[in-house]
Image 1 (cartoon, rainbow over the protein chains, first blue to last red):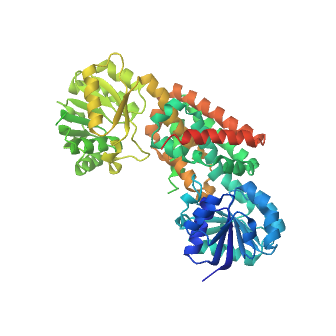
Image 2: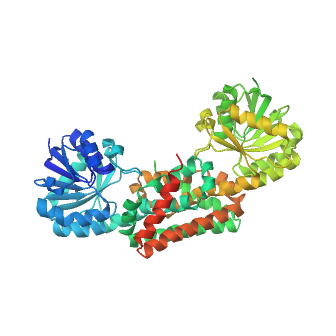
Length: 276
Length: 276
């Protein structure tokens, strides 16, 4: 059963492309159109059956009953007026941005049927060539309704993610940004700082541990600059907590306190073992 | 062709067990014996064909022409006299410890045929149940000869690792500990501090990024306490460099300096992309 008549995906990259393929596979819309700044991305999205039609211009989104903004955080915000002019303010709108307070503040003001989404299903890779419709299957999608979010809009966006195989959870935008500052943004900070600390001529001795720990340091710099900056306040609090935990480790080592060090390591293992 | 008559593996855990299986598969010794503190580990090593005979007592190593110490760093050092009493000082001895200055200092004094080995092939898992003879295939094994290391002993240990599918590289123990303080020990410190910073009730929002970045935080606390403490001086220098890189990120975010932040992220991606 089609959930939507026409879905417009703005940004046919890793997430947008994966969404397009999954939406078309699951027949959730009669038509899927895509917009990208790059002609090559549109061509690849067509080739990979992520969209039915594509364009470099936003006009193609006209008549959509759902617009999905799958572009970097800053671009989501800067495109909002142009999108509204084409689809009208009553169109259902969601985004897949990694921070929510700023985006939600901007979009909910001009789209009464806006609901924020954050599928926890990305990777350090980018581009439609890395698209995979299976990434939503079994993943968690955080929805960030506010007090003014319309019940019907929330229900439709929730239905979309569930039909794509994701579990959904609703939390407020500020709570989302606080949680993600620890579970995602801080992890990136740690990975960036770690790889930048390793002298270049030592890199050939990297084993699986360093590779895994720094995998996300390969993430797109422009995309992540935007994510980190739009969550500055929460992120700086998370960094402070990280520095404090780092100090505890450092002092245990400095003081040659084996018991204290083993205690910190046991706490870390206990917590890590609760993840898969 | 057998390289050795009788190899004794002290410590039939993840690395010791994997070594036993690989040595037997490749027929590198006429006999492989194993020693463990735990009867269950011996039984499993026998069942998994990692050893031909096993014992809780060291006596079983008598008559070996190669002893491989595959126990935690502190245990390697504390067992040395007992091993020497049984096999004699001329026996070929190696270890697979993750730090080398301290171990090499102790062992090379009483075993003229000692050569340090560090196969960069471990994992956060432990125990013979996780043993896998394939982990050495294509991996790098760092050998740490000193000025007094005998050429013949080095050649034989090198031949062992090459026959197991590893590439070898020789560096001095101090150089080894300096490099590994960055490429391995600091990565563990970052992972321990990161997971300890994430509030417990946020862990259910963990995505692939956090999971990969903290995978090695599951490492055995006692084993890693020993590794980190025996490389304290170099590790503290590496931590200092990490703190400085963390500060650079923090200040770029604090000052809302998008250009500076993007520059740091670009540097990180460039370096990370040189690893597989």
